[in-house]
Image: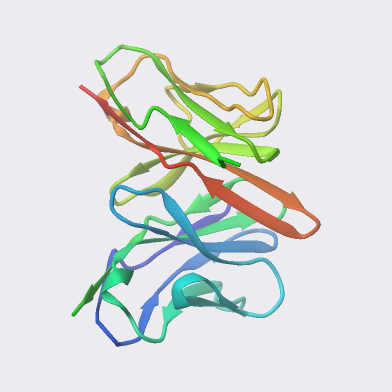
Length: 113
Length: 114
């Protein structure tokens, strides 16, 4: 079955600095990759996805992610972090050949003023 | 178009009690699934369904039952609640058509078993 690893439990950045949240994946077929964000006591909100096409995917709130097939990675990035970006971020992968989606353990992003 | 609706939003159960978490979607999505979210473990797949009448187990199915009698509804049943089932539960529905793929989550049910 497919799996996702988010190697960092916590990422801390200063407001205005670039941020990166890391994600690596494992699938047997073609990967469908996703990033979701969760604010306290809220559900998951979709940020962006990679299905096919350009390796650089742009999403909501100024976030983007780069699909790297050779490194099996899909890191989330933002050029200039905001305090309001502080939240829990989940990477997820679906194997194109099946229907269920698997999530990473999540990375808590804290942006300090 | 309400999306994915979960009820209740909060529930407290005593050990051994049973209950059903409701999930309904109005987007005519074929695929529905249930996840539980626990601190440090992300979302783990409990059960999923690829269409009415078809269900299958995910990563952590023990202690839970599901059924899919209609496209719209996918209830999750706890037969005999245990403290280990204290968690936040999310229902999701998705589609895959013509190369497009979408996934929508409900707002979650916070369950406490005492």
